[in-house]
Length: 112
Length: 111
Image (cartoon, rainbow over all chains, first blue to last red; front, side, top):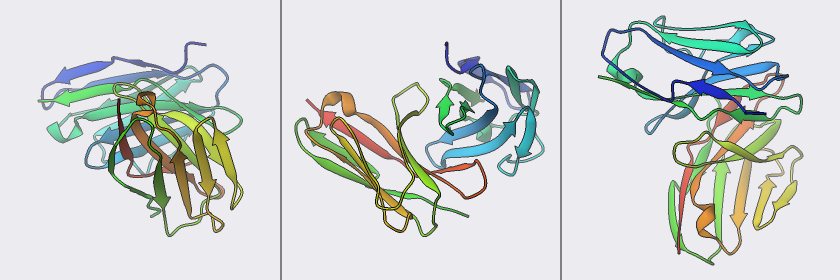
């Protein structure tokens, strides 16, 4: 298995632009998590899905952030409009039946 | 809000030395996991401890879950340069699937 796949690996954009991050979980995993990691705040959970349904989005910073999971093999995290303080590494993770989370390589986002 | 404090925040030691990293909280967790993260990559799960007082060994790494399930420690014996990385503990709540991650310990092993 290729593991969790994220794209793009790096994204540089200007303030006000829309950013879309993509994730393909490991096949057969029923839960998907989006995290954000910064030096100041560490690794924070933004939202997670079970069987494609959003369960807890309490970590989503504000209305500029949205996430979807249209099917079991794909999820997106969108920021519109982006701001410099959104600069971070965004991770997607999927979880197996043993409750172990497997992380993707992350997307490093820089908003200028 | 569940908080997990890790100490030390940074640790730099010589190859061959022993070290211990701590993960503490005032909250009780149903289980606790330890991850290692290398630059440019996502965290990788090392171990999950579930029972209070549980000890698990992974080669030179020894993990312990506190009796009250509020804290944990990671002990590395004879550290190697390959142990370098960011170590994160993560606690799971009861009845939910969310993990709360600790503040992290950045470990550097000097050859």
